[in-house]
Image (cartoon, rainbow, N blue to C red):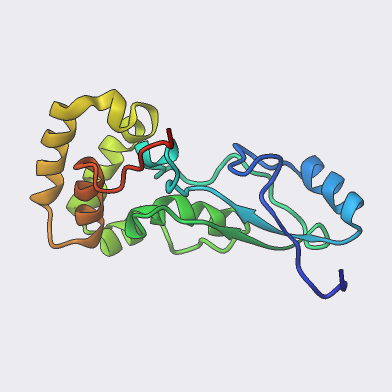
Length: 170
């Protein structure tokens, strides 16, 4: 393959929990060139991952030096605006997130939506739709619908209503 062609790499798995410098060093040694890291966090477009919202900042990765990677891309969730807290972690990882903090997220998402998401994000990550159950999802969907017309509120309410859920293949 020509050396000016980037090779995407997702880590040791398609949706890696973390990528450490040792992981990158190993693949770079095998390929003989830096890789373009395709980070499948916070993506939630698969049958299993659509059950969850990944709103926590990217904090489980090593900052990777130029020379090992040619870039670091993140694959957002189906809920693009609700992906911003997680994606902000990428900017912070490389020292580019200055000025993008909770106040900025409140401005972009709406203060009430951002506060609500901060309260609920751990439950969305740990329990997911299936763990929260229909009654809890309906209650939370109503809470988020009350925060409309903000895009993040609409995305989260739709997710809670099961509009983004993918059924695993049989």
